[in-house]
Length: 285
Image 1 (cartoon, rainbow, N blue to C red):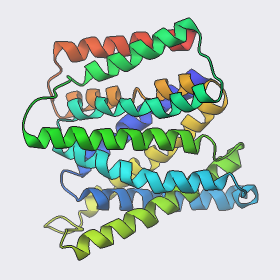
Image 2: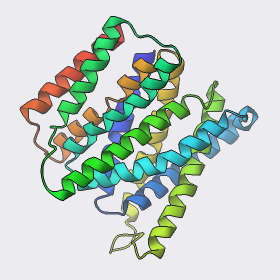
Image 3: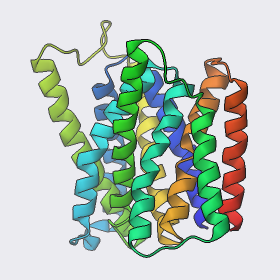
Image 4: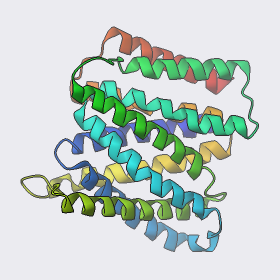
């Protein structure tokens, strides 16, 4: 179950990142974060009311609040990095953030077996290679890498926090709702501050209403990924769940290859193969 839900997390996050990065090329990244997370908050609010999730309120929700504070910063940095692109190079570098939840798991006493240790090493190496990697180039590319590293550790922190925010299904809905509300509040304040400094909240042609379904998909896929990750982390070792969930950049890179025709070099193909091998080791270890 851990492997299944963690891989579902990778798929959902990979597609959400691809969509968010693509939208951020036409719409300010902060606007993408605020609108997509607002849609997700509304949907989750309805689910919380329908399931009676408010009854699960307790001290654990502070973990969701903390995740909500960190998440928008990480998303903003990542969407900006993806907008600078290319996605197939930027996205896999985000896997370094897996060090945060893996470190937490080890600190709490988890000790993966030899096959799982090998799987972690192979999977992380494969995902990094799947992106290129290209560390030389124009200042824009170096900026994209710096933004990606900041985002990666932010995502890793969210991984660790949200896994502690609930212990039941209804409590999970409430925790994700609280996280999204805080996301919107923090993102909204940042957007307001950006506009006050002369930044743009909308593209030159105004808000593209035709992009609303894509924004909804990005927000809801991100929520679903958080949910599947929590389930994975609660039913198995966090070290395994976090590494399998961190394979999402491969999904982003493959989506960029299929839809944007970004070229996949030999080292990237080899990296994807290593990521798959690492996944098999983790799933069977």
